[in-house]
Length: 167
Image 1 (tube, rainbow, N blue to C red):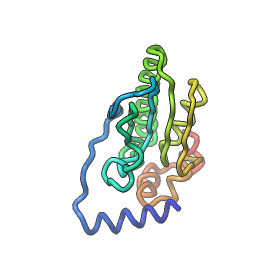
Image 2 (cartoon, rainbow, N blue to C red):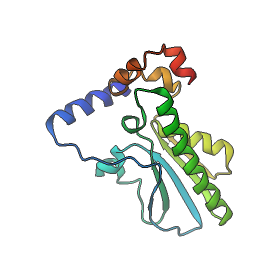
Image 3 (tube, helix red, strand yellow):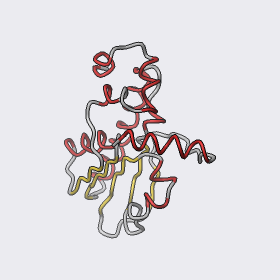
Image 4 (cartoon, rainbow, N blue to C red):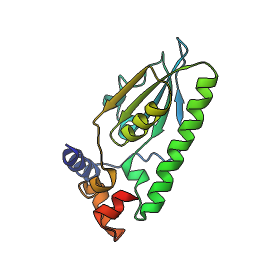
């Protein structure tokens, strides 16, 4: 499944100018809560770039804290740098989650692709009403060797798949 998305990405990139979305570990905050509920989304940049992918995700009657958990932005040649970026994103989201819990909000999580790691981890720590996981994955380090976008970066680290996974 991930190979299909990689191939589509390559074809699209070859035919068009890419809309660049800069990486930030801070969320994009959208909408307003109608029922004292907040959603924490961990998504990739495609959900922001393409209306067809975001059409039913970003509803006006929801307060949404949307974090970019995008492989192309978070994976670096140096696995320690990748780990730092992943940790920064997670720690920033934890601060926002804890703040909303203190304010009395009910918490929900949505993870897409790599974002599932963050959503599932947060849902295991914080009380949440709903957890939505789309396209779950595991073994993040070893999976780096399977994707066209991440394979080169993983190989440049000069680490074995097992060592990369352990970091």
